[in-house]
Image (cartoon, rainbow, N blue to C red; front, top):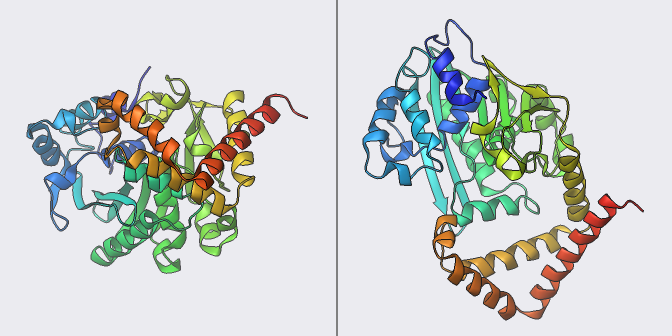
Length: 359
């Protein structure tokens, strides 16, 4: 099965002038946004992608600072060829704020004389990043969405003649759509297309807002056949279903999406299991008020935060002591919080039962 890396090997000799940007290119740039360009580039600096990739590959312990070893292969792939190597990397921003519970990162890739791809990073391995994702179930907008809009507005000020593609994977896809919807009518005119790769949607009331309606026709959403993340919350735009070589939640990985020449391999619809899970989760969330969702998320985050782990890796490295601490902290929660968690789990089981055995 061919993937993003095979696509770069096949198409890498053609510049964007000879072969315009396509959906697979958008996925490549969205994946590149996860790489720590902030370690080699200050916010106002720029560098050719090939040079930036070489710099990262030469940095100590780079294999420990990427989310997957395939990111190393991606860096190696973009050091050559007329398509990606000359692309300019600029406006790199990466911030995590525990107080506001926000994780935000973005990078702009100039792919032509007056054309850029703004890529928003999805959730990294920080616990606060995952917390912000869960906050989307009861808060709108979350801080990362506001940061994405501000970032794009600043990039537009600095590049007044450019047109833009926006894109991202997972939470990054949500940030791309949010930015396109709420950046204002003047900046919307400069957006060519928005790519959302398995990113969650929005609260239902957002779908009727004028900004979202205006940008909706320029949004392309992609989900794997057993999508979970990309079906969360609501969206109006239809999603193209991409075949993934993985199973379950692992299909969220862009490297598992099948590519044929310059396009993805598509399927007619998601799996029956994915559709059932989608209905179960939506029914579960509708059964809870925003206040109840907030209490649930805050209680669970409090339990995990007491382990003093800052990342998923730290939780995993000490999984036995972390699990023991989590169980202890669950017992130590106040009675209202324990009731909220128990009640939410009962609702989830009831929704799942009704979905499997309709009444």
